[in-house]
Amino acid sequence: MESSERLGAISALPARDRTLILVELGALTALSWLYLVRMPMSASDFGEVAARIAAPMPSGVVELWIVFMMWAVMMVAMMLPSAAPMILTYAKIARGRGTDAIAKAWLFAAGYFAVWTIFSAVATIAQAVLQRASILSNAMSTSSLVGAAILVIAGIYQLTPMKQACLFHCQSPVSFFMTHWRDGAGGAFRMGLEHGSFCVGCCWMLMLLLFAAGVMNLTWVAALTAFVLIEKLVPYPRAIANIAGASLIAGGVLLALRA
Image 1 (tube, rainbow, N blue to C red):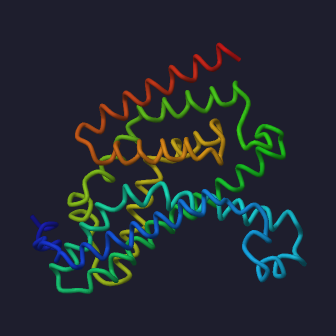
Image 2 (cartoon, one colour):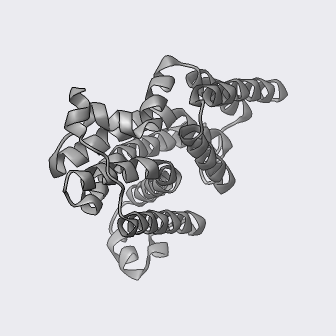
């Protein structure tokens, strides 16, 4: 009851605001996918100015930054569609409380993607380490045995209580806001951080499947995007997660046997 009072009534979001938010989310998603399709591989791909800025820098630093940009933009492309219901729900609540719904919704989204940006930095370091250890090839994929191990570990994680708990928070926007609501601009950003943390907890092993399939394999990126969206939006998320977990384990075993 207390949490419901803190949250207040959830009013309908005006069609203009809803349309504007959806158009903005769609445009950002489309731009992210365009970046991935074009996939800049050197400073010169960003233009003459970027090439001049990067010229005095060590090549390793430039390459690491480009890899980080790839991961960061990829997380926006993959996770923004599934985050849209949470962002819209926040906007509804903010509007009902008489605040600027659109501005606060983007602060919430900024907090959400701040966590995924940290994940991108960790993934960038992991990729560099795996490449230096010759575990990750020039094609950005691992050997069959390492790929099989990643599949099995990802499958096992799908079955864990931690996965289920994080998935619950990601799939239940109203429940999340009832228990985590904070007022003000800082509160919007902090709630975004908290939701992003649950989302990373839910999906981090799925993202690492890209090391097995090929980090720049856009077919796999699209497939994982679709799966994350399905897992968060359809009923019976536990069943979906369990089926996916069993399938990943079986796929990993088969890949190991063929290696």
